[in-house]
Length: 461
Image (tube, rainbow, N blue to C red):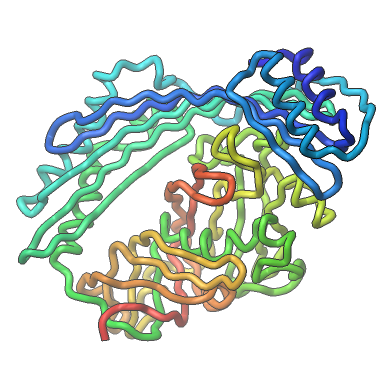
């Protein structure tokens, strides 16, 4: 996108007022989406995002400027603004960029931009009408197919010059069912760091639609969940959003570096039940949250965050790593060039345990099976969270019984991971978009079936 020679001149300008580090992050991204509602294609949209962000550091001070003008003149003006804002004296740093090729561990066979809209619409319709035709109680279905071609370039005053191309595809189906005058929604949104081959080998569009509709119909016929403190079995896949939100954000350097985390200063200490091993791994081939390099040019890696209950690592970007005196772990991420990079998750999950699923369920005399989790909120400083349960069932005498709606899980991250006392073997991943200070980024969450021995369930008394 931008030559090494131009980058060298721009970086030299950026450090000219005393910076000890400078970085160029340039991108050219193409987003394509198709949506359906009322049995027809509603929109076909294309968006191009192109520009550059230039960041400079001096010690623990950071300044960033952005521009949509990626000519040499535009970049030099942008670098000049960042340098002027930093204004820490003068510096003479010799910058010599060397290109690094990190390879691609996420091969794409069918680039979405090479596939016609007609072919994409056919895939979307397969999922859409599978949901629409599932039951007479289905009142509405919406669907979308998104593909992203995200190209980035990173050049730094440390001599790095690297590029990466990130292609992702995602199908989303949402269904609304009505019973006895009340409606409930079900959804399913699988995605991968893949092209359209995803629908040949990984995702069955028809099954996606059926899953969304089935959830809606089940919940529309459900009674309300009773409230109380009880054991809860949380399903695999997107159930991992509990760890992601309640604990994962508290392990990011953006919180830890400032002491604004429930887990700050606890490396080497037991923070979870010995049954719990938690990992953030950006190297899983073709996974939704995977990367080759992060947005500072650090190679992706597998980070064991918690091992058998012991805190082993945080997720760290370069700038916050300065404050912590620790190196980057390859977790620097941003939505686009217009956001400042910070520490973020990639594919974060609780690793498989040894407990059988049937034993986890049979161990609960009375409690809740949270088969599918929904959204929620968390305070990273305290770890206090509140999450909706999209699909839940009561457990009685060790058996999964009737569905219940309106359930939520309320608690504190440091408590819930201590109370995870059974971990199954059926690890799966779920896909989501995570919002934080550096924007919205694709992340995987995951876990096998787990049991939380005691947690507050919100519902109706």
